Amino acid sequence: MTAYAVLIGLVVLERLAELAVARRNLAWARSEGGVEYGRRHYPWIVAAHVGLLVAAPAEVWLLGRPFVPALGWPMLAVVVLAQGLRWWCVRTLGRRWNTRVVVVPGLPLVHRGPYRWLRHPNYVAVVAEGIALPLVHTAWLTAVTFTVVNAVLLTIRVRVEDLALAPCRP
Image (tube, rainbow, N blue to C red):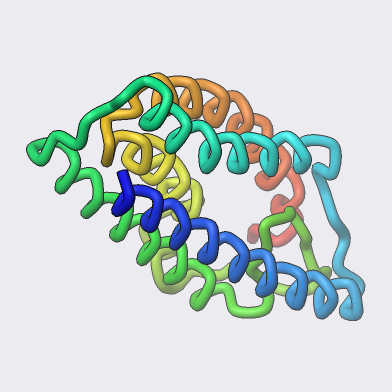
């Protein structure tokens, strides 16, 4: 359980780093005339992610979920790969990356990095992590619950993002 708590702590620190980058990028985008879309669903996304980071270790501790090496190690690899993909997205989008949907008028879509192959690669990372992080320590209730909630939220989010970015498409 101690190693799992450390892992969750590292993911929390990663999320705080994301928020710092997002806050800086939001200030830049606003200074460039950026427009935010989908404000109403954003607090629900934050709540779901906080819920994931609280529920996974709580389930492990309260329900005595064991670490099963045959499941835990591959899921840890998925978590690490998801972080890599997420930060590849952040690096590729540069100042444009944000946890919110913000569009700076006049900027074309990015078609490099993971965006060469995927329309929403950051959400692939979110889905993978949402399943894998709880399963590192067999917190399957959290994995299932987050996956269902996240599917609903991402359906809304992708619609909002696609509509916001439609004017940028050729």
